Amino acid sequence: MCKGLASLPTCLERAKELKARLGSFLQKPNWSVSCCKIGKNKPNLEECLRWKESFEKLLSSKYGLCAFTTFLVSEFSEENVAFYFACEDYRNTKCPAKLPAKARKIYDEFIGSEAPREINIDHETRDITKANMQTPSSSCFDLAQHKIYMLMAKDCYPRFLRSPAYRDLVCQAKPSAKATKHPQQEKKV
Image (cartoon, rainbow, N blue to C red; front, side, top):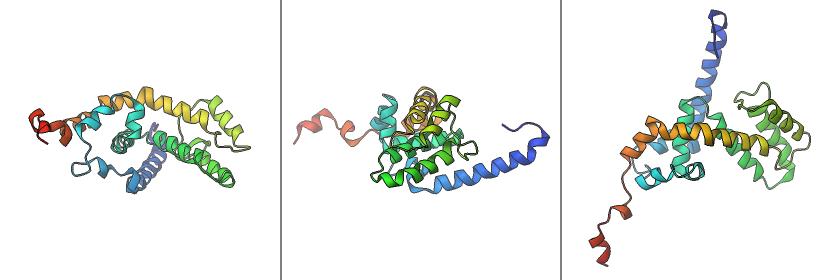
Protein backbone atom coordinates (compact mmCIF):
# COMPACT_ATOMS: atom_id res chain seq x y z
CA MET A 1 0.00 0.00 0.00
CA CYS A 2 2.61 2.60 1.07
CA LYS A 3 6.07 2.28 -0.48
CA GLY A 4 9.18 4.38 0.03
CA LEU A 5 9.77 7.78 1.55
CA ALA A 6 8.22 9.58 -1.41
CA SER A 7 4.81 8.24 -0.45
CA LEU A 8 5.14 9.07 3.27
CA PRO A 9 2.70 12.03 3.14
CA THR A 10 0.21 9.80 1.32
CA CYS A 11 0.68 7.06 3.94
CA LEU A 12 0.11 9.52 6.76
CA GLU A 13 -3.00 10.88 5.06
CA ARG A 14 -4.28 7.33 4.55
CA ALA A 15 -3.57 6.47 8.20
CA LYS A 16 -5.46 9.56 9.38
CA GLU A 17 -8.36 8.70 7.07
CA LEU A 18 -8.47 5.13 8.39
CA LYS A 19 -8.34 6.32 11.99
CA ALA A 20 -11.19 8.75 11.39
CA ARG A 21 -13.21 6.17 9.50
CA LEU A 22 -12.72 3.46 12.10
CA GLY A 23 -13.47 5.88 14.90
CA SER A 24 -16.82 6.84 13.44
CA PHE A 25 -17.51 3.24 12.45
CA LEU A 26 -17.01 1.97 15.98
CA GLN A 27 -19.16 4.74 17.46
CA LYS A 28 -22.24 3.56 15.57
CA PRO A 29 -24.40 1.55 17.99
CA ASN A 30 -25.12 -1.23 15.48
CA TRP A 31 -21.44 -1.77 14.75
CA SER A 32 -19.95 -1.36 18.21
CA VAL A 33 -17.38 -3.82 19.51
CA SER A 34 -18.89 -3.38 22.96
CA CYS A 35 -21.60 -5.93 22.12
CA CYS A 36 -18.87 -8.58 21.89
CA LYS A 37 -17.26 -7.83 25.25
CA ILE A 38 -17.68 -9.84 28.40
CA GLY A 39 -20.90 -9.08 30.24
CA LYS A 40 -24.65 -9.50 29.99
CA ASN A 41 -24.64 -9.24 26.21
CA LYS A 42 -21.99 -11.89 25.64
CA PRO A 43 -23.13 -14.72 23.36
CA ASN A 44 -23.45 -18.16 24.95
CA LEU A 45 -21.30 -21.12 23.91
CA GLU A 46 -23.99 -22.72 21.77
CA GLU A 47 -24.43 -19.53 19.75
CA CYS A 48 -20.66 -19.18 19.23
CA LEU A 49 -20.43 -22.79 18.04
CA ARG A 50 -23.39 -22.32 15.65
CA TRP A 51 -21.33 -19.70 13.80
CA LYS A 52 -19.03 -22.52 12.64
CA GLU A 53 -21.94 -24.30 10.95
CA SER A 54 -22.29 -21.76 8.14
CA PHE A 55 -21.44 -18.23 7.11
CA GLU A 56 -25.16 -17.48 6.91
CA LYS A 57 -25.64 -18.46 10.58
CA LEU A 58 -22.79 -16.14 11.54
CA LEU A 59 -24.32 -13.19 9.65
CA SER A 60 -27.82 -13.84 11.01
CA SER A 61 -26.61 -13.71 14.61
CA LYS A 62 -26.45 -10.25 16.19
CA TYR A 63 -23.34 -11.17 18.16
CA GLY A 64 -21.85 -13.20 15.32
CA LEU A 65 -22.15 -10.24 12.98
CA CYS A 66 -20.63 -7.98 15.63
CA ALA A 67 -17.69 -10.34 16.23
CA PHE A 68 -17.14 -10.84 12.49
CA THR A 69 -17.29 -7.09 11.81
CA THR A 70 -14.83 -6.46 14.63
CA PHE A 71 -12.53 -9.03 13.06
CA LEU A 72 -12.83 -7.34 9.65
CA VAL A 73 -12.07 -3.96 11.23
CA SER A 74 -8.90 -5.46 12.71
CA GLU A 75 -7.94 -6.61 9.20
CA PHE A 76 -8.88 -3.28 7.58
CA SER A 77 -11.52 -4.92 5.40
CA GLU A 78 -14.76 -3.92 7.12
CA GLU A 79 -15.91 -2.33 3.85
CA ASN A 80 -16.95 -5.80 2.67
CA VAL A 81 -19.56 -6.39 5.33
CA ALA A 82 -20.61 -2.72 5.25
CA PHE A 83 -21.17 -2.95 1.47
CA TYR A 84 -23.07 -6.24 1.81
CA PHE A 85 -25.52 -4.78 4.34
CA ALA A 86 -25.82 -1.47 2.46
CA CYS A 87 -26.98 -3.56 -0.52
CA GLU A 88 -29.44 -5.45 1.68
CA ASP A 89 -30.86 -2.17 2.92
CA TYR A 90 -30.99 -0.84 -0.65
CA ARG A 91 -32.79 -3.95 -1.93
CA ASN A 92 -35.41 -3.56 0.80
CA THR A 93 -36.16 0.07 -0.10
CA LYS A 94 -39.93 0.32 -0.49
CA CYS A 95 -40.08 3.65 -2.29
CA PRO A 96 -38.72 3.40 -5.88
CA ALA A 97 -38.18 7.18 -5.93
CA LYS A 98 -35.45 6.76 -3.27
CA LEU A 99 -33.48 4.18 -5.28
CA PRO A 100 -31.40 6.57 -7.46
CA ALA A 101 -30.04 8.58 -4.51
CA LYS A 102 -29.36 5.48 -2.42
CA ALA A 103 -27.70 3.75 -5.40
CA ARG A 104 -25.45 6.76 -6.02
CA LYS A 105 -24.45 6.87 -2.35
CA ILE A 106 -23.50 3.16 -2.32
CA TYR A 107 -21.68 3.44 -5.64
CA ASP A 108 -19.72 6.51 -4.54
CA GLU A 109 -18.80 5.00 -1.18
CA PHE A 110 -17.84 1.48 -2.28
CA ILE A 111 -17.44 1.09 -6.05
CA GLY A 112 -16.44 4.34 -7.77
CA SER A 113 -12.81 5.02 -8.70
CA GLU A 114 -12.42 7.49 -5.81
CA ALA A 115 -14.52 5.50 -3.33
CA PRO A 116 -13.29 5.99 0.26
CA ARG A 117 -14.26 2.40 1.18
CA GLU A 118 -13.58 0.76 -2.17
CA ILE A 119 -14.40 -2.94 -2.31
CA ASN A 120 -12.28 -5.44 -4.19
CA ILE A 121 -14.23 -6.51 -7.28
CA ASP A 122 -13.09 -7.33 -10.79
CA HIS A 123 -13.36 -4.82 -13.65
CA GLU A 124 -16.18 -6.70 -15.37
CA THR A 125 -18.35 -6.61 -12.22
CA ARG A 126 -17.47 -2.95 -11.70
CA ASP A 127 -18.45 -2.13 -15.31
CA ILE A 128 -21.73 -4.05 -15.08
CA THR A 129 -22.59 -2.28 -11.83
CA LYS A 130 -21.71 1.08 -13.36
CA ALA A 131 -24.00 0.32 -16.32
CA ASN A 132 -26.77 -0.68 -13.89
CA MET A 133 -26.50 2.76 -12.35
CA GLN A 134 -28.02 4.29 -15.52
CA THR A 135 -31.44 3.02 -14.41
CA PRO A 136 -31.13 1.93 -10.78
CA SER A 137 -33.36 -0.96 -9.82
CA SER A 138 -33.51 -2.94 -6.59
CA SER A 139 -31.18 -5.50 -8.20
CA CYS A 140 -28.50 -3.20 -9.63
CA PHE A 141 -25.89 -4.26 -7.02
CA ASP A 142 -26.74 -7.97 -7.00
CA LEU A 143 -23.67 -9.12 -8.93
CA ALA A 144 -21.22 -7.03 -6.88
CA GLN A 145 -22.93 -8.03 -3.65
CA HIS A 146 -22.72 -11.70 -4.60
CA LYS A 147 -18.99 -11.36 -5.38
CA ILE A 148 -18.35 -9.73 -1.99
CA TYR A 149 -20.48 -12.32 -0.19
CA MET A 150 -18.46 -15.12 -1.82
CA LEU A 151 -15.19 -13.37 -0.96
CA MET A 152 -16.22 -13.12 2.68
CA ALA A 153 -17.57 -16.70 2.77
CA LYS A 154 -14.51 -18.27 1.17
CA ASP A 155 -11.75 -16.02 2.56
CA CYS A 156 -12.70 -13.84 5.55
CA TYR A 157 -15.06 -16.31 7.26
CA PRO A 158 -12.53 -19.20 7.46
CA ARG A 159 -9.86 -16.78 8.71
CA PHE A 160 -12.30 -15.50 11.34
CA LEU A 161 -12.98 -19.05 12.55
CA ARG A 162 -9.22 -19.66 12.90
CA SER A 163 -8.59 -16.29 14.57
CA PRO A 164 -7.59 -15.84 18.21
CA ALA A 165 -10.60 -13.50 18.57
CA TYR A 166 -13.07 -16.28 17.72
CA ARG A 167 -11.21 -18.86 19.81
CA ASP A 168 -11.24 -16.44 22.76
CA LEU A 169 -14.99 -15.86 22.41
CA VAL A 170 -15.62 -19.62 22.42
CA CYS A 171 -13.33 -20.17 25.42
CA GLN A 172 -14.92 -17.35 27.40
CA ALA A 173 -18.51 -18.19 26.46
CA LYS A 174 -20.64 -19.95 29.02
CA PRO A 175 -23.09 -22.70 28.12
CA SER A 176 -26.70 -21.51 28.09
CA ALA A 177 -28.78 -22.17 31.19
CA LYS A 178 -30.76 -24.72 29.22
CA ALA A 179 -27.61 -26.65 28.28
CA THR A 180 -26.24 -26.68 31.84
CA LYS A 181 -29.30 -28.28 33.48
CA HIS A 182 -28.64 -31.75 34.78
CA PRO A 183 -30.94 -34.52 33.48
CA GLN A 184 -32.23 -35.08 37.04
CA GLN A 185 -33.26 -31.42 37.32
CA GLU A 186 -35.23 -31.57 34.06
CA LYS A 187 -37.34 -34.49 35.37
CA LYS A 188 -38.41 -32.49 38.42
CA VAL A 189 -41.22 -30.29 37.24
